[in-house]
Amino acid sequence: MSARTTALRLIVIGGSAGALDVMLELCAALPDTLTTPIVIVLHLQASHISLVPELLARTCRRPVREVEDKLALEAGTVYVAPPNYHVLVERGATLALSVDAPVHYSRPSIDVLFETAADSFGAATLGVVLSGANEDGARGLARIHRAGGAAVVQDPATALYPTMPTAALAAVGRGAQVLSIAELSSLFARLDGGMNLHQDSLR
Image (cartoon, rainbow, N blue to C red):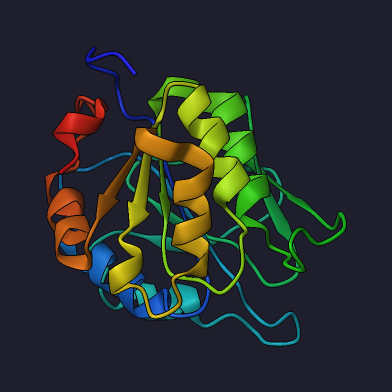
């Protein structure tokens, strides 16, 4: 990836088991000045009503919404995938819902979110993979990296379930930035819509 400055237009975050507490910490670290939309997939039981938006809203100083079909991305808003639906990022800066087959036994799928984000926003995308017990997100993060976006992975040594970040690292290779929870919080506190997405600037 080149060291050019790329306007950060979309942040996508994926996690599963062990990721919610990390996500709460990252939301709390977000600066008030960040206007880039954030879309989150956390694996949930399909039969459960999602409490994640409500939980994140307690720590985020910005609107938190559960994704609805054909919802336009708005500045400064955090979006959370609903249970039992894939979330797709469309080129018109909208979010769509799908009931296509589960990916890695999961719906919503991190791969689906990340792959469509890469296709729609390319080098202006920041993808983050957190703790989890399967390999969902690895393929999608690799596509973000190939599209010129930034790939960030929670250090497996700090993950309650390291399988997901380990798989993401294997898929992306040296192009991924590996950060501890404290380093992730520091990064989120420094996020800016005009930031340099070169990997060296993310630590």
